[in-house]
Amino acid sequence: MLVYGDHREMADPAERLEEILVRLDAMAAEPAGISRHSALVGLLIEAGQLLQGVADEGGPAEELSDFVHDLARCVLTSSDSGFAKFGELPRVPQLSGPDRVELRLPEGFAFYAVYPEAYAEAARRLTLAGIPRVIGIRSIGTSLAAIVAEALNAPSAISVRPFGDPFAREVDLPPEIVDREAYYVIVDEGPGMSGSSFGSVADWLEEQGVARERIAFLPSHAGELGPQASGRHRERWCKAQRIAAQFDRSFLEDRFGPLQPFYGGGAWQRLKFLGTRDGEPVLIKFAGIGRIGKRKFELARSLHSAGLTPEPIEFVHGFLVERWLSDAQPLRAGEKPIEEVARYISARARLFPARADRGASIGELLTMCRRNIGLAFGGEMSRRLERFDAAALEPRVRRVRTDNKLDREEWLRSPDGRLLKADAVDHHQAHDLVGCQSVEWDLAGAIEEFELDADETARLVGVVGEADAELLGFDRVAYAAFRLGQAVLADDRTRAERLRQSLQHLLLEEH
Image (cartoon, rainbow, N blue to C red; front, side, top):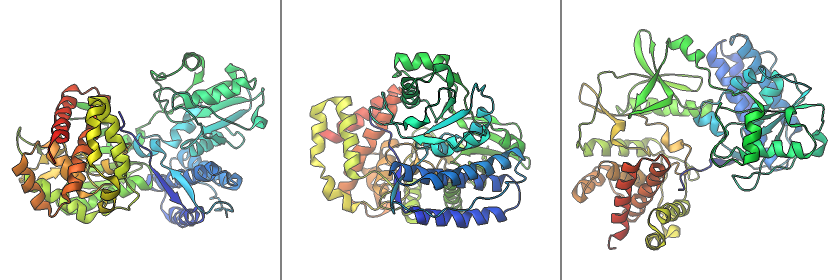
């Protein structure tokens, strides 16, 4: 099933460095504390992302790499001093090279609470039998490898972009990095389904004569390799020195007391907690380190000001803190608050326009539909997608920061009777392929999730305002196909069956 997607953007390196310079000066003027530290970590992440783009283009990256390492050193000083100081700030470099590079979103920083500081602490627990040489796997490995190298007092890290089959990656590293007396530390998030990114670097080192016992791994979790791992990689992973850079929530507990994991929708949410602030209960949820999280916080404030969501209180180093509505109630079984949901969708579309490149194109969504519908029903049903003309529909898309998750359990009824939307800031920028879409996408989501009939659908569309009927027809199919893929991957058979039935009905409709 096709569900996940990469987030990429084109950027001018000189412009990005100018932005970093301005924000570096602003950070330095902040009072000591976790807010200033968080701003510094955000700058490290953005500089590392820029280094990834320049390195992928083959541009001159040495000066930029030095800058990233200097920022990493400042982050370490800040972390080690309890956020009291950061040392001498580096000079922002002047770059010569490509004027446009492709930046990839470091997913661990955005979605999975991967913290650079945790990698520094993990590195310090390694037992090293030689001078450490740090190799970071791009994308996220640029900034992570820099902070690991600084924590180990090692030479500057290098980074590498694996290529080839996702389950059998390969790498091509410069031969001059080989030193059989060195101790190699490979840094990345994950591992995922196969661990082949980690494995490809270790394979290359072994092929150059580096002994297996001189290779260590710094992953983001302590688990084993996924089911697609090769036997060679699995054997090495089990025997190698590896220390997980796991999330440390102590900075939250210092501020919000003992934390309780939040149970939502019957499933434990690993990055959501209940705590207290000034004696009142709060919900604390990961939103992303740096600017991605701050943008979500500002979005949450706007939605609350419009009376649509619970109140966001503050943003603390990647976590959004909102007031916990202990007396709010979920929707009653069968309740369909059509007008209220429509007003939410309409307000969101009005408040949050998005750039044209911030979501999957109609062509990309159509590719996803063919894949998921073909797997669910076979080729005959997927051929019914031929009625959709991507070239004709694409110009009609008017992107907004859509909600993308209008499930019944995402709504709360406050004691004063207002309908409030929970988890309203994350799903337009989640680790999937959808991203920002037109208002028709959220209309399709509401129709599907509340199982609206034709008359109810007309009421919903009528309150929102004029909708493009052809685009809505396509989005209904695409939404159901996408959520079917999610349900299959999550092994949610009940939901998958309901979505199969919806798709079958939509695809067999006469047009």
